[in-house]
Length: 226
Image (cartoon, rainbow, N blue to C red; front, side, top):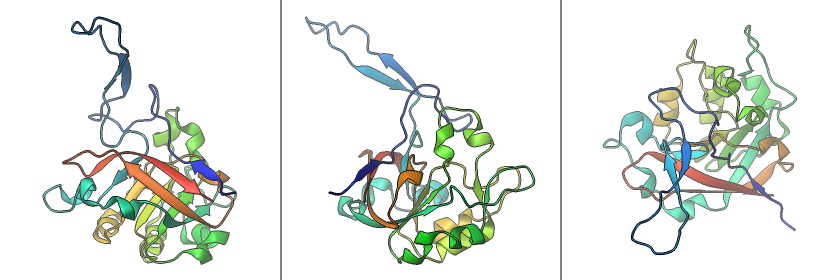
């Protein structure tokens, strides 16, 4: 029997969120509907934005919606059963002088699944950082990729890349790799949860974003089949 793992982070009040001007999610009940006789129940998702929770993103996030393709332009069949490799760094990663996880080429190459990476698939990087999903440190103390590590990943020519942490760059001292990442035309997904629980080196990934027009990114549901 194939094992299904939901790697989508929960959307709820108090979860991690990018700093202002990004709004924070608030889930409120719909007021009484005057044109319906009986009571109906619905929720208002106030403050939800295109990068709330686990989301899928195209290079238009970096280049602009008028200079790249949008999320709605991606054929849905390309997002189902993608060949995927999970690089689990849970027990093997480097820390910088500030105690933050700085993901290096050596860390990535040491993963058993690294040998299974194939061009045109998905690469997901697991650190276990998703356990801080509801805490302030989720962004402030986040792991990050070194420039060399990101170059190593880009050179694998994936269709999609993701991780279980949201802030890929060192916000205090940038590694300056995003221009190269987006120029490589790679979809970005994340942040995810439960990646450290993926046991097999090669799996299948399905990621389905909300069907919203005019945006480079949107919240999605992502699952892995082992």
